[in-house]
Image: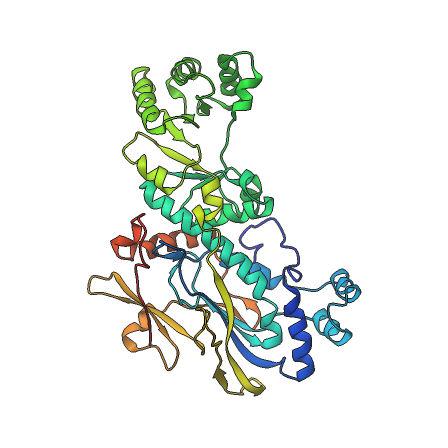
Length: 443
């Protein structure tokens, strides 16, 4: 399945320079030493979850596949590398024909992960695989942080719809990726039209306070909006006096008014007052949408309020205080010589300061208790997966021989996350600080 098969209208540009210089200089040195073509296995994992988080969420896998497929050095890029003397002529010639021809396995998008989980496993020659480090980490660290925040907010919302509206609080391109990751984590729509266009996400939005302030009176603004967008629109009611605005909104749109939005003040108190007022005015089906710097804790505090939907911006697109997952991309095995049949040997960094790694290509499975609830993340560094865990393996093929084999609709990742989160112990959904809800066991 290709990006075109999924109906994605925007071609992904070359990602070849979304990398760090040292990856190219390592390549040059490895080509010279003769080790560049040794079969190698790199793994993406994190040594710890962000402080207080109980699980992580894998997001960005689809974008990683796009990035790998489009990792190509065109003439202008090669000219830049030559002009800046980044690498020598033989390396430039090798880069001109670069295509990733290896295999990638990983946790499918939407799955949960824990410390040590081999989230992504890249197997190819050292030369092909090492170049992907930065772009892979850039995508997975960002998108997984957003998805984890979104998941916590979805839990706090208790089934009420969540709308992403954080584009103005982050980089313009990061905002598009954030919209996608938020959808994986549980949001239902976005205000970002680029995300809607690129990924087919539902988009939302009606008006800001500026529209009300533009008109001589609030009633004129509401009338213009209803005439333009219909009675099912959402009217923003906190520009001046909320009570007066709600009364005017119902008088103008009638009981068919779609929603009112509250963007400031004591949201808990206002939601109760507005619900009572709407009901008294006969607008019993008019929904209440709240915004205003919400995070998972603010959403949870509104659980008992008559709120129908939440709009979240800043906290979501910044990972709710944890904008990265601290994932790393480490060489864990390499062949003893060139050739596809050369045996792999484990390799690992050994140092002080908590930055050690565990060598060897891993397998991963999630052990379940008698009730089918996850009780441990089991990581194997040798041998085959035990028979009792064979049905709970987590790594799936994503790329075979350089060909993408795991593209899927966004909804599949979204539903996978719902199922994965539901399979965790109930304490996973607590918003209070705590340790990872599953221990990681090495087999």
